[in-house]
Image 1 (tube, rainbow, N blue to C red):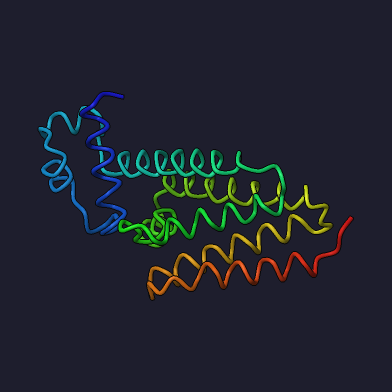
Image 2: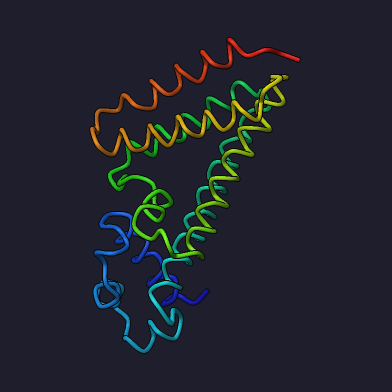
Length: 185
């Protein structure tokens, strides 16, 4: 990826993250990424393509970051905690404005390519939890993995709305209660 293409992509991620997809126009992205209009269109022929690429890059970055964090432990319970800690750290970032994948679902319900990327990210998250819960020898690991993802999505929205840093600890408490009560194989 060229430097200019990367500049455009990362500026667009920043703007879409903060302001949403529908309220940020191409001209603003061009201006703030300091590229010529022709350069922009050379790399991203449409806003739809740019949005999809932003979501792909965000997906790639999150997966890499969580996967790297998970390398710190082979204990499944600790790995689960590591993911919740990852989310907690994200919630404390100055650039936390909620989930770009949830925003895509909300703002772009008919943008198939973006929704495919969002769905792939959410499937990866669910699959990651499923593998961890399976390693814990939990009988209903698939159901629990979906429930934990729902808890995290709720925590993201709650934190975005209230900014009181209580959502993730509440979600963790519910998740651990569910795990403690789950039947083991």
